[in-house]
Image (cartoon, rainbow, N blue to C red; front, side, top):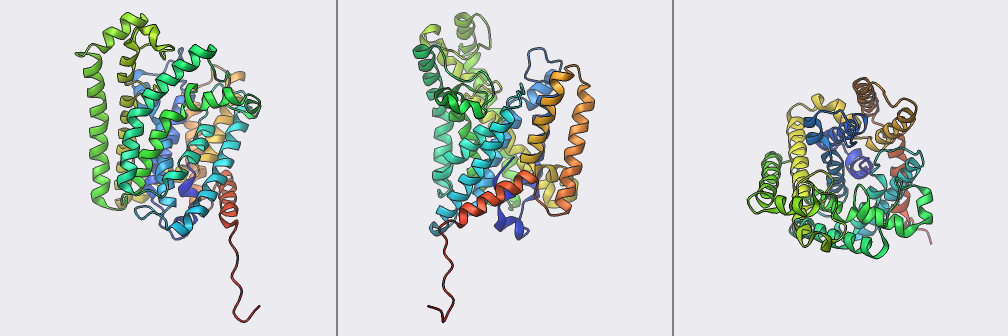
Length: 401
C-alpha cells in the first residue's frame, strides 16, 4: 500500500532499496490482517486482549508513518531533491495518490464492514506535497507542532460540526457514491471517520522526518529503536500521570458516566472535562499521547527491521516481499474479507488468518525474486511516471534545426 518506495524508480532500479523498510511494511500488513480477520475492533470480538493492545490502531499508523518514509526516500532521502525536480516529483505523487484513492473508493463499493484506509492515505499524500522540499530541522518542527495542535483542533472542530448540524460524516466506507455528498465525505475524511486525516497526517510528517535521516547508518538504526522506545514509554507515562494523579480519569468518568468516553461531541456538554480527553492514550483516538505511542512503535519496528536487514536480509524476505506490494495484497485481503464475512460470519479465524498471511508471503516472495512490481503497484508506477514526464521536452539533436 505504500506508494513511494515501490514506485521509486531511481532507488529500485539501482538496487538501493532498503529491505528493512519493506519488511516493516510487511509487519504492518500482517497487523492490519490481524485486526480484520480476528475482528479486533468489534465489540463482540473474542480476540485476546494482548492482541488488541499490540495491533489495534498501530498497524494502520505504521502504514502512514512508512508512507512518509517512502515519500522522503522518493524525493532524495537525507538530501532533498533539487528544485528542478520538485515539480516532477509532485506530479508523480499526485498521480499515484489518484490511483490509490480510486482503488480505495472502489473497495468501498464492496460493502465491506472493514475500515479501509486507502482514500485517507491518498489525501495525506496530497497534503504532503508542500513538505517534500523541507530539510530535517523544519520537518521536525512541523511534525512536533502538528502532533500537539491537531488533536486540539480536531476536538474543537468535531464539536462545532455536531453542534451546528447534528453530526456529519458517512454511514459507509468512502466509495464512488460518496462523491455525491462532498461535505459529508470531507467531514468523514478529515474529522469523523476511522482515520481522521487532520490528526493522522502527524504520522506522515513523522515518517518524512525518519526518511530524511541516513537510514543506512547503523547509529541511526539503533537510535530509531532507542528513541522509539522513549516515545512509546513517555507517551504512556504522560497519559497515566494526567489521567491518574492529575485527575483526568475521574473528571471524564464523572462527566461522561463511563471511561474511556466516546468522542466528546460538544465541549460544553462535559463542563470543561472534555479537554482531559486529549490525555487519553487509546487506539484510534488521535490524541497526542496516542499519536506519539504509535509513532514510537513504528520507529521501533522500523529500526529492528533495518538492523536485521543489515545482517540477515534473507530472514526478512517473506515480510519484505509482501511489504513491497502492499497495495495489491491489502486490496486483495479487503476483497476476500468482503466475500467471506457476509456468507460465513463464523469462519475459522485462525485458519483464515494463516491462509491469507501465507498467500501474501508466497506471492510477495515470488514477485520479489522475479523483480516485478505487484499489479496495482505497476499501475501506480506507470501513472506516476506519465505524470512526471508531462511538460518534459526532448532537446533537439546536434546538427538539427
